[in-house]
Image (tube, rainbow, N blue to C red; front, top):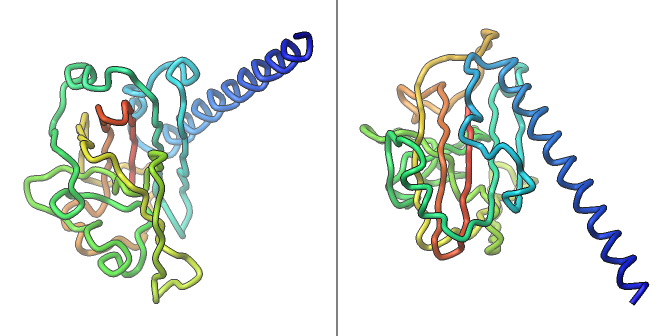
Length: 216
């Protein structure tokens, strides 16, 4: 019994440390985005406290140099009632996510976007950009295939919830970086060569809510 108590105490300590680290990482990345990008409320729709939302995954890679000026962050959380978020925000666009019909952006911007990501980085008139959701790890497994142009970088495609909805809270095209840098962007992006998008993704079946911020 005493041994079990010690193990439980250790697990609780590790959980607190992990949560604190995640919270610090979120705050750091948020400030980084705001320092290099001309928008100070990109993360307003993210939950205030990561730990209380059963964090599943958090990732962000903002950068501002001549090789890549882009940023991407997402947070996946377990939620018993994800559909409640349908009325939480005012959305500019809502739809079921289908790779072949959504205007999705893969933030890596490979030199051959059509070949590496068949449906991504292609502007669809009348639609707002959302992330290539197959880049999100929903915990449902994944598959990989080799890209002949980049054999050392296989394309990883995560499996998606069947009922995945994407809701855009805010999006705008244009150059909003504080530093002017010319970088490669696929011509298929059309008027969305640069811009930003933020919103939420919902799955009632998997009981998940995903928050995203994407700037490029």
